[in-house]
Length: 373
Image (cartoon, rainbow, N blue to C red; front, side):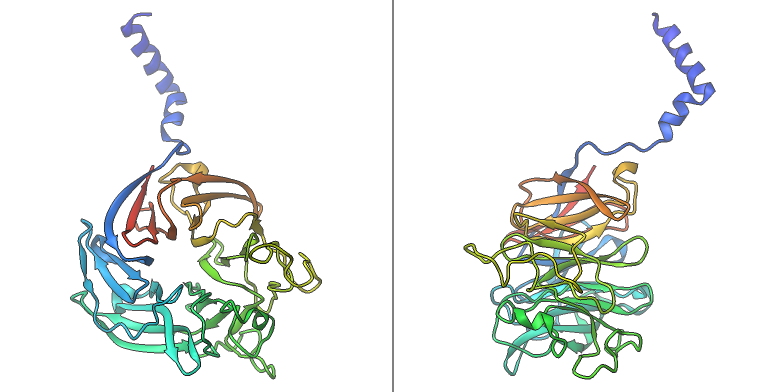
């Protein structure tokens, strides 16, 4: 067929709408690539998106800094409180207030020293107009009690649609039985207002022997949390050796740790009675055996990677160094897809204002990476 006839045939098809329909349908991305935005970060832990294409990044040793749109690292911000930076302890999550454009308010959590050891604390602050310091820093919540441990701080923050804040709290490793008790904050998800006060509709308000900030309990060490498209809270948490879980924390519910788990003791052997289910305890939506060591969590709302990926859940793997795409159907995991294998220990996953995904790699020379379709 001559070139002229081919063009005429294509024109005819376009006029019928057949080719036009194909042209406007987004297609699933067959692959993605990692584009380094910035490197030279010291064990970065969390990422937030500032106006004018800038980024706000926390580094576990206790620094918070602004990264320019061209990847240039700013100096460490002044005003960050004293941080315990040993083992898993340090400066951890950061989120911008939903009204940041007007009030420049942000929230961050960190390992706070104090009598008895340390614990996870949640602070509110204002980012100065010159992006060089934090102002009006105030701790609005402290995990109780403080203990001598450098592990399992949890520390992901999510602002709910009603303006209250959820935060995940680890059970501090050596205090795992505390996760089943309501007189402490170990192994819990808590819910507080932006001034640190307790919402009246929290499930344990007024219950004798229960701390009123608790939203859900029986968790191990949650290092990923996000809102689903319907506004509900989702989280994942590390299992011991196997048994990493995705959960949907609901008010007053018990998620089982350490009574039920799909993991086992380090080195082998069952934990407790070695059971995976018990009446009154919630089953995970999904679990991994072996563990992937999940960190960071985001739902994709954009169509930048094609319609097939819209609505997928993305989770980072610290252990294996990849980004996990989780395809959901009717609230259940349908399939998983490993992306960017070998990119490094993925600590945080966020969707940016441009609709693209961004990740942080938790390494001595950590990177801020844009995920390109």
